[in-house]
Image 1 (cartoon, rainbow, N blue to C red):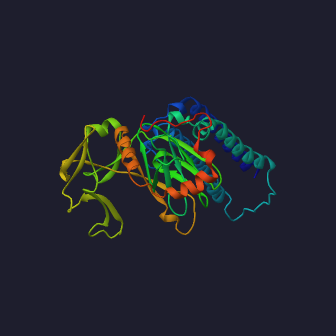
Image 2 (spheres, one colour):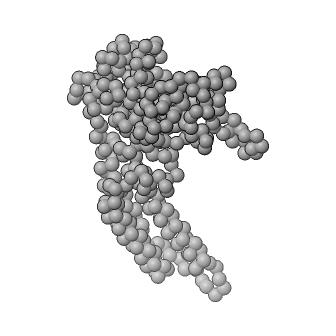
Image 3 (cartoon, rainbow, N blue to C red):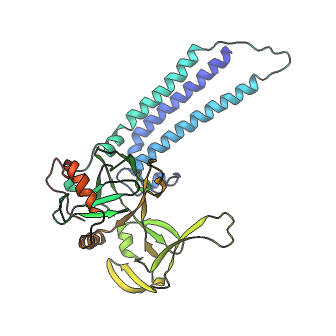
Length: 371
């Protein structure tokens, strides 16, 4: 048994050396991590937040390697011990109370790994959770979730919250591409969790507490009509292609004929009631265009609630529209002319009980839309 204990200590010691070596490699190469480095291996949705999304993916990768290494090491030892100390004729089992040395080793090593992880990712944590952009440098949006919907508010022409020209939406979040987005949140009722999988954003929204998230969406979601799947393209690529949007391209989901898995396939199909529609080409709007004249349709990402917030939790989802700067400005103008959706809850609850949430302590106004 003493020999087995020494072997176990040796293997755990080797693992600690490898882990510390990985720490040095991470310290030198972690800052160089890019979207291209980690999308290839990642099982997660494609990252379109180049401000810090690649760093989040890298942290997941390092933790996965550490956990997998510990799993295979411990399970390998377990299998080896099962074979080595199996019941055999002529061998008598020996009772061993335990090994203080081994217990110290397998307690200290995980503790050192966790301490290393805490210090190694401290800079990334601060960048995401503490170093928020100034409101004058970002597009500021307020989120006020409730069971079971997402409420969003934008400042109007006066660039101030809590005034009559505010723009409010329900279950639709629209943002410009390549801009810093700062979202200020509090909950109307229970704890919700603001989750944008493609942007590596997740933050609990708590009643009576102001929480914030920031990110930059560096890609625009579009639907590839040939491949019938969502893809992400840059602002420059968007302007170089013919992108359809509007009701001409009808979003559908159906089970394919003969498919025994009963899985619904998502796709865009031509709306028989509207044979022509609007197309964005070269930054210009072209109307009355045929369905067949485009290869892509403007699509959206999902805003999910990652906290079990009640019996209707599964219904709590919203659309995230990411638009070029000019289209975002046009959307703001159109939304300003429409009746505000659910504006009453903002004035009677948010503005009444949380007026301090409407202002940036450092500045008097927020950044103009789309600038």
